[in-house]
Length: 128
Length: 128
DNA sequence: AATTGTATTGACGTAAACGTCAAGCTTGTA
DNA sequence: TACAAGCTTGACGTTTACGTCAATACAATT
Image (cartoon, rainbow over all chains, first blue to last red; front, top):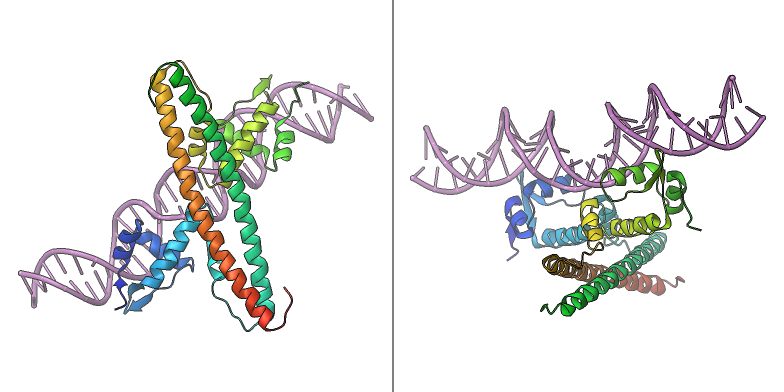
C-alpha cells in the first residue's frame, strides 16, 4: 500500500502549488514517476519535498538545497568520493552552526526587548 | 572621536557593495547623514547594517528585516503601541524557535551521514 | 459519444535584491 | 587650472523563484 499522489494532491498536502512541484522538477530537485505523461508522486517524493521545504525555511537557495540532497545519494564504493562527501557534510554543518549563532543572538536581543517592554508596562500597571 | 565612513569604506568593511548600501537606503532600512550630497555613515549605521546582514543570513527578506528593526524604536509612552510591540516581539521569537528546530533537524541528519561515511571509510581502512 | 475535469508543456509576467553602466558634480592634487 | 578620484542619481539588466495564462491532451462521468 504505497500511497500515491497527483501533483495537485501533493501540492495541497505540502501547502504549495503544483507549479512549484513542476518547477522544482525542472531544476532537478525531484523526478517523480509518470503514468503516461501524468506525474505520480510517492511518499518518498513527499519526504524529499519536506527536506526541500525545510531547506527553504532555513534560507537556502534551490541550488544549495540540491547540493544538500546530493549528500544523501552515497556511493560507498568510491573512496575518493566518500572523502569529498565527508568534507562537504562538515562544511554544511559548519554553516549551520554559524547560522545557529546568528539565531541565538537574534533571540537574545528579542528577549531583551521583551523584558524592557514588559517592565515598562508593569510600571504603568498594565497586565501583560 | 566618532569614526565616520564613506559608502565605499563602509561597504568594504561589511563585505558588501556601495550599491547595496544605497539600495537599502531607498528601502528605508538606513538613513545616513549627508555632507552636502555625500553620504556619511557612523558606527551606529554600521551596527544597524550588521543587524540587517544577520537578518539576511537567517533568510529574512528586507521587508521583514525592516519590521524587525522597527521593534527597536520603542515609544514607551503609548501603552497600546507597547502591547503591539510585545506581541510582535513574541511572534518573532516563535518564528526563530521554529527555525531553530529546522536547523537542529538538519544538523542531526548531517551528523548521521557523517557517521555513516566515517564508518564506511574506517571499514576500508581509510583515515578520516 | 459528448462533456467536464485534470494534467502537461510552453511562454510570458513578476517581485525581490541587487549589478552595471551612464552622465554629471565636487574635490584634492600636480 | 587641468584632471583624476570618488560621489550622486537615474535607468536598465539580471538572477531566483515562482505566478499566470494559453493551447492541448488525456481521463472520467453522464
